[in-house]
Picture 1 (cartoon, rainbow, N blue to C red):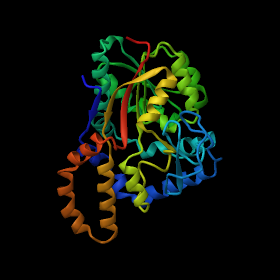
Picture 2: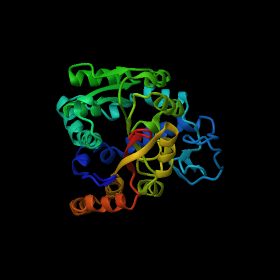
Picture 3: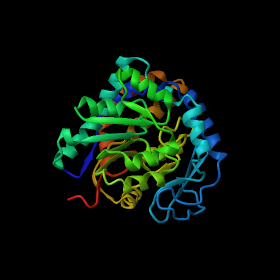
Length: 346
């Protein structure tokens, strides 16, 4: 089993995430509202990961959100704080779950199997390679959203429970499952919950970048000796960031909106060290080429060149996975999946 994996086909994902292609104007309005909320928050003085004082120099801006690089750990922080007020406005007051949930059970299952089963398989393969069997794996998924990853783990025969701050998403997930697979835990109570939870694996799939009290959460993981492995996926500073900065009339899927900070290999390693863990195995597969394809399609449509879009699309899609794997292997992908292992485990 190798410590680093690269690449994943995006073909089926493209069929599911068509809002980003077909509703660019609507998605831009959503992003603008989220930026308005963030820009009303206090300036960020310290790095989200290591607490180092941040420089004043802006690395780049994405739809009015400025990003700064931490000189200590390399983490990319937004200039403004992601406060509790920001979180309430964009996660609880907005109908956020509607952007990522299907009300139809068949569509829900398709999304779960297409996007989340591969993630669960990556985790299971890694843990079995560590000598764990299914009966000995207990997974707690924090920020479980609509329950997709919990359902995927259960479909592979694993014991899994999710916690989520949004009651609407918990209700939706439980309705789709026909049983209670998620429970609601208020954000301010999550560190205490994590510190005593009797699970040996914690997962955070697209979650750590949204947590306001991130340091409290990582300290809770550090202090809970039940936790042997942490599975996370986070957004990285990447080619997608360059594409978005150069195409700000297209919806910024990756940076901007609710992504108020971006990770680097060094900041992930620093966060793992702070938790008493090491980076054990990684899988890099980005959506950078999907972002490029989307932006070109949006601009061709808006420029009245639909026929060119129809000519171009099948040609680009035939090579999109190969192009993305080049980006992944050059460590410039928009996303990383990493499994962290407690440092004192053999």
